[in-house]
Length: 357
Image (cartoon, rainbow, N blue to C red; front, side, top):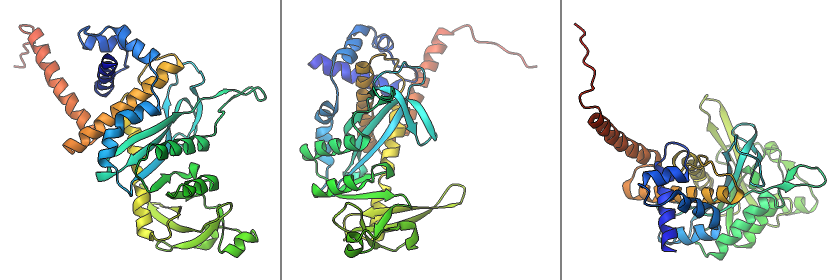
C-alpha cells in the first residue's frame, strides 16, 4: 500500500510538471529508473480509483476548510481525445464551448468551495455509453441529471458541510430542485428565458403559467414565482452583464432561499466561476488529456490522477498565494535555468565566435 501511494505521488507530480504526453516510460526515465515503467503501468491498469478513493485523499483538506455555508458546484467538461479509439468511456459528446459534438471523455464533478474560496473536487463521475440495441447508437444507461443527483447523495453521505448547490442551466430541472430541497439544501440555478412560471399558488394549481421573459424584470427585482412540479416558491431575478464586445447579456436565476436578496444571489452564483477555473487548470496544468492510455480502466484512472494533481496545485495556491498558472510558470522558469546551465556545460569550447566588424 505504501508503495502504491508513493507511485501515485510520483505520477501526479509528473502530471503537474510535464509539458508533453505523459507516459509510464517517460516518468521512469525522469526518476532515473528508480521505478520501472511497468510499476506505473500496473498503477493505472490494476488499481481502482473512483470517487471513494478521491474522497479519502481530499477529506483532510475539506474538513479543514469546510463551512456551514459551503457551496457545492456541479458541472461537466470534456477531455478531448480526437485520436483515441472509441469505447464505452471515449465517445462523442456535445461541447457547448465549441457548439458541436467532440470525441473525448465526459467528466462530471462536484466541486466544493469552502473557507477562503478553496475549490476542491470531492466527487466525480465519468459518463459511459453502451450500444443501444434499438437505435444502434451509443447511449448512456444513466442520464447526466441522475449522475449529478447520485454525486449529490454521496456528498450528503460523506457528511460534508454545505448549504448551496449551484449549477449551470443543464441541471436546472424541477426534479433536481425538488430533490435538493428534500435534503434540506438550497440551490441557485439559471433558467431559460422561455421557462414558464406561475405567479401564485392558485395559478400553479390552475396550471396558469407564463414565460419568465414576459415578466419584464429589471436588475434588482426579486419576484416570487412557482415552477411546475415544485411545491414551494422560489425567488426569480434577472442579472444583466456586459460582454467583451460591449453587448449586453442577461441571465435568469432562481433561488430556493427566500431570505436571500438580489445582490447575495448574484454574489453566490458568481462563485460558479470556480468550476470554470478548475476545468481550465485540470486540462492545462494537470495533463488531463495528455495520456496515451488505451483501455477504459487506464483512461479513467488517469482522469483520477489528474484530479489529484489539481488538488495538489490548489493546496499549493492556498499556501503561496499564487494561482495554478503562476505556480507552473515558476516551475518552468526554474527548469529552463537548469536546462540552460546544463547545455552550457555540455557546450564548453563550442560557442560560436561571430565577428560583425
